[in-house]
Length: 340
Ligand code: KG4
Ligand code: ZN
Image 1 (tube, rainbow, N blue to C red):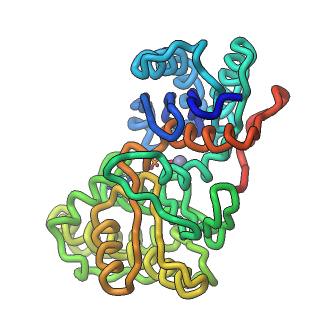
Image 2 (tube, rainbow, N blue to C red):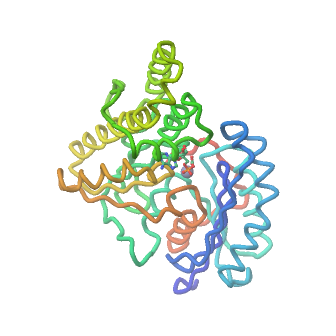
């Protein structure tokens, strides 16, 4: 088997983004993502609409990934795909497509765990982005996930903390919804927060044992606070939007940093790698930079296009599994719940 020049076609379809990428070893040649705008009008992802959109998008997206990489499908070494976790209907589209194409081309099929991929995205070779060394802590924060993982090696990972209810992205999006902001509200909270006073309205930290998180209580405290204030003054949100957003963002950051500090103390590991859509948040990025100075942490943030859901991160896992000849049987099925 040729391990000098490995060309992986990767497919990601676990939620509402249809993505395909081509990698040459650990370098990304193309990474095409088709976002599904349809969900905006419903204020969240509608699973049935997501799987239908994946069916419409997958062929043109794969086509584009191959042509942007300037690779013919006959040159591919293997096909990697997201097996789970995610929405069943969405996963099925990518899984079936990957299986059929691998069978047709008579090349290996490689299943990938989406959460492992968010972490191994740090190993995509990019000139400006340093890679963490083992062991490190990964904080994966998005609309669907909130986890702290102790990463011992590429394929030896332990989840040491996770949310017991909502994901951190949901805390941003649901709080934004309470303020009347459109979906997804996370980036808007970030935008308004930049002009606001983060200490204006302190929100309580939920009491959750160990390294686990809870965000549903946070969202409820935002709801009660806004209800109380708008009863007194119907224009409260409009008059104080920046301060409210800054306070919500600060509340969420406090919860995340609190648990990270605990995880560092518990493991003695000071290398922190973050990923997932919420790692785009400017407040979180600034706070992590401060933690570098204050606590001697080293923090790693991948290029933005590899933090949100994308196929390049599936491809890098595919590459490392290809080197181990860790291939997948054609009888494989998608797995909505799939731990690391
Ligand atoms: O990783 P992602 O694109 O998709 C998954 O959920 O897997 O993450 C999307 C989430 C949404 O909840 C969105 O509001 C949040 O990431 N997000 C942000 C920011 N940019 C995206 N949250 C806060 N601040 C941001 N700048
Ligand atoms: Zn994800």
